[in-house]
Length: 203
View 1: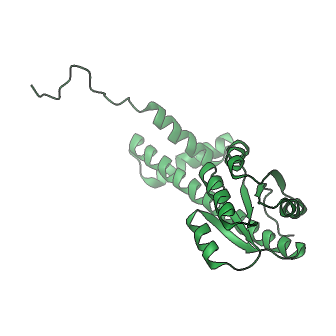
View 2 (view 1 turned 90 degrees about the vertical axis):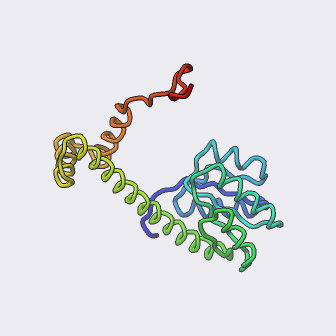
View 3 (view 1 turned 60 degrees about the vertical axis):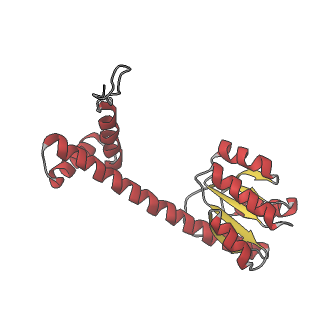
């Protein structure tokens, strides 16, 4: 099996038998099924409470029901939703994409389903890693800018300060950058709010 990170997975489907099959496949991939939901009114609450890494939504008897499940999960979570279809359905895929679905896979035998979920979850893991790398890079650039302004140094000097502090204290460079940004925000002077008697110079 490809090497990718362990995920906490929420599965949702109108059909209970498909829920159980999905749970077996996800567990077989080494991931943890943290919730299994059928009802739209409950899936949002569960998603907000459990904070899954990814959600798998199966197309049961009704495409409307599945789309409502997708909408609730996307609204309540920062995790991607993967739609599972029994067959190609361009109209449903288009509507699911508008509601924020990350990807879709075609259902089949348990072996085919496992292979498809395996590949899709691996892609999502790679996507997460890429997003994390972009986020860390942006954070480091922000910290460099703060140090450049504070100490009147160039970008290279600012980076050297971050790197040296990271190495001397055994901390990740991104953690040091985050600390710089956070402390900078905490030390900013409060905005001068207008007082009740302040009429901005107007009589």
